[in-house]
Amino acid sequence: MRLDKFANIFLLTIIIGGGALYLFNEQEQQVADQDAGHVYLTNLANKINQVNQVVISESDKTTHLLLKNDTWGVVEKDGYPADFSKVKQLILTLSDMKTVESKTSKAENYGRLGVQTVGDKGDEESRQIQLLDKAGNVIETVIIGKKRISKSPGSGASLYVRKATEQQSWLVTGDIVLPRSQKDWLNAAVINIEDSRIQSVKIRHTDKTELAIAKKDKTDKHFSVENLSEKIELKSESVADSIANVLQNLTLNDAAARGKFKIADDAITHVDFMTFDELVIMAKLAKKDDKQYIWFDTKTNSDDENTKAESQKLNETFALWVYEIPEFKAKEMAKKIDDLIKQPEDNKS
Image (cartoon, rainbow, N blue to C red):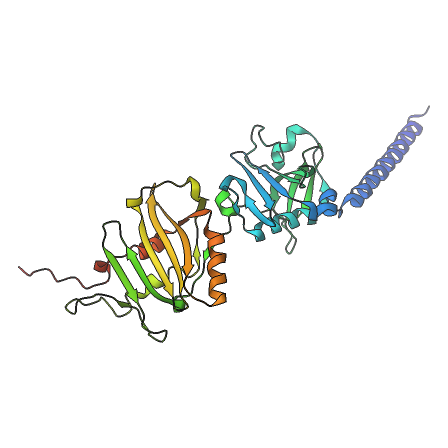
């Protein structure tokens, strides 16, 4: 065979082979394109209303969210109510995730995407989310990995994921944001009583001293300090107003079951709030382990049905819980008369 003829045959083979390779790659790309844009967690999409429990496993902790009596609670926090908006957002985001493209199916490469099994070496960025129904049947179990930072302006959020029962990992649309700690799952709202409703506040300290402030009428601009000697002058006419404001948008840092909270009676400061419509909110305040805790009971002598209903509802809410609250709120409720009056000037030498 002549050399030039052999060269032509070889060149033709390359061209044909290259064409076949191109066709194969094109077919592969078409398959990949067909896989893109599909709902990733199909079982969840079909059973989203059956989700009754969410178990979030991370390298350092596991959090159980449980739906009970139509309320989501955090099991590790004695079942204290969770922030429903956070639970809802998580489940909806999971159900809305759509495939973008398939990624590695090799376990040795999972770490680059953060989709290794929680408990495996280097799992700091992987988080497993398991969704179960009321009977405890698993609906979906997915491992959430790293976010993908897109360089394309205007492109949506995406992240790497893998079903716990599958080797194949995926890039999907969506962004899963989990609270950093279990207490961050809690519904932070405790009570919200506008200061305009407050008629009086009485504080009984652990040293048996008392401070009482009140308004004679709703139209009074400021709270007056009761049983104050005429010789004593307040720092300002509004100095007591902040005490009556502590129940407005009071939020928690953490919560615990009241039955598990133990503290000596002589370490408790009692703070009683009375509203103009005769709702009495009885607060007990105590410091433990350098944290401020409060718990409530309510009562009323009013014949007004709305006030009675409010008292009953608040008692039902407060009955089981002790709340850790911000330090600045606790300080307002623990104020003494000396915090409100002008102190004598130092004697001049």
